Length: 466
Image (cartoon, rainbow, N blue to C red; front, side):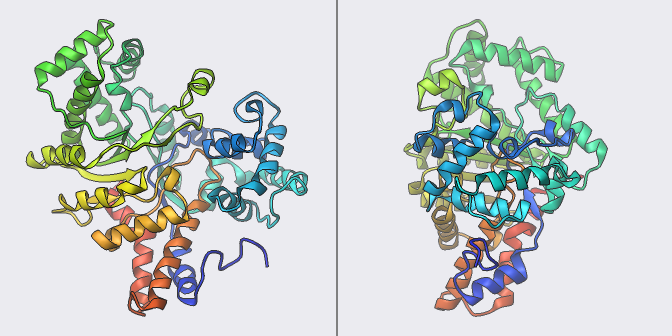
């Protein structure tokens, strides 16, 4: 039997039935990823397996470093095939890591290859995949069609011009592609030089002068409106913890003005300014029917050496251990008191925060089914144990039936089998509960639950526009 077989990860008959009958063939709505809108607009073709598999994939980079691979073969300028061969030498060492599963799911689902990647099979796999990539339907858009991706949401700074999203919309592709408003640089005032450069870029993208605090807020609102016109209904934010030291407008204005004059803000000032901007944005999201995503808790750029040589997103981010509950409560409650709390999805990076996040969200559920979403296992928790624990926590403290399910958070066009990975894990957990008598042995009822989590709930919740 091949490694990726029909009942891969499905350990009982109920699980297999749930997956094959209800979950497997649901389409995909990938509502958070880092795919390039430029590559989708231009329908990029990939020259080889290294390009489509290894570019920008910091999950793989971490494994390569752990295996002692030189940085030149990871983020350096080495020959693409040499980088691929380094990955082939590394993959046998990743047993037990989700990378081993993802790698072989992608080989099977994208290229119909059953071989286990290793130094012995590397050349054969390289040739087979490169032959496939030369075929017409293995372009960026072709891969979206292959996996029934109905819609995806890229991650876009407010300074991005959105010309590629406009082109995709004009082309009327089967897969709808929406920008996601990601304004994390809007509170990067502790580094005044960088913030001023970002403000200049915001002026260009918005066509508005941003020399004043009022102009800054208006430019953000104008960019939000542009995203809205392109069909977006979703934002994204990432910070260690919620900003909850709320300044008044006079204080926020003073912090902004001193920053654009070149003075670095203190950490306290940065948090105050971030709190003001997040409240401003949250009110806009609520008024316009948007969903606010928050990725909570990573400790980023731990290796100064790699930050200085490569930049951010080099694969040196890990789980942070901040106290979350009180700050999260204060922020959500502030908007809730104003009747301005938008639909919200929160993903936590630290598994010890699972019950903190899930129970906190339960405090603010009202008006809309599943309005406050405990997001799927994210980043370091994007693996079987992490997914199962997230599902169990949600089931124990909220309504699993309203869960909007999985996303790839990926930079790779080969990553869509991760939805299948999640669906198998979900169905195996539900099927095991049925077998144990923890859930009723009602296949249609449980199957409909799985089906909704795979696609329908997200589609109903996000209300993305054509």
